[in-house]
Image (cartoon, rainbow, N blue to C red; front, top):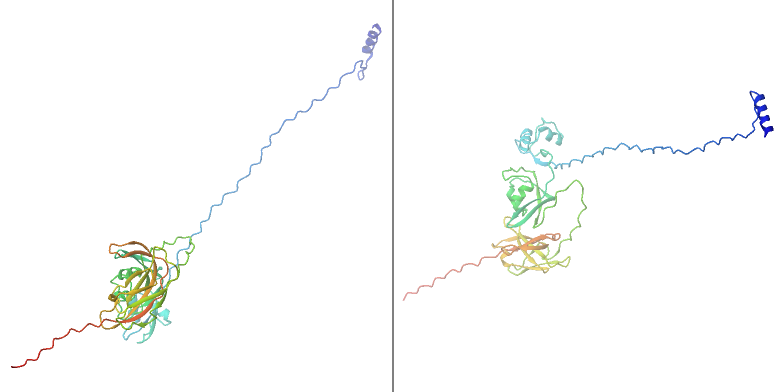
Length: 342
């Protein structure tokens, strides 16, 4: 122990400034274990795309249907200005349509095309209640009648078997309208007991299933003369389907020589109908008749016993026959008894 103390003293006394003697090992410091500190990295946010403002595509306006021009034959003394005033169009429009100058003279007998004053919107179906029954005038694909000299609105409607008020309404006319020769009028199809079609919207709807064709007329053949006139007349037709319990055939017979008279109507479940003698003309003249058959669906009954109905399909083609009216029985005249003198 003494030796260790002496040696230690000598070392402490003679140690240099740079180096020294280590009697005991110095422990090396252990570097600290790095601790993991989680770093928060924000999740990148998705920048939303700018929303696009929807572009509204305007619906095209309905196109007005232009009516075709009508013909006018120039009469002696007529002038272009007079025709323009009469038909409510400009002289330039008449001249341009016919390919001559507005100051050109007109010649008697010259055929002119007269434009209608303005573009007119399409005609639409109209309906009225006639004798408790809904009657519809449908102008779709209607026949166009060109007015002749001497025509009247009531006469045209009567010849076409169209209710006068319906005829005016579907043509957008009034009873005071003055007809002009060459004017075009719509002869609508008349539907009894039907329903008005819905107003078309901007989106087209699928077309409905086409109705069944009308019955096929068999007897009498076209333009047959009923002979003898007082013989029973039976109308016959060919069925196109089996009738449902609420379906009937409706027979219409109209006297074309008496356009003011309403047509006769009758209903049958058979494919034949015997015409009553009361439908025969009551004057000794041969008159022309039109007949047709439709399938209708009976929906009720009126107070007078007549059916309320709607159409269940297309009507038949028109058939025609002539019928001699009843000849009045002459009133017997009393023959005077000869006077014998006593």
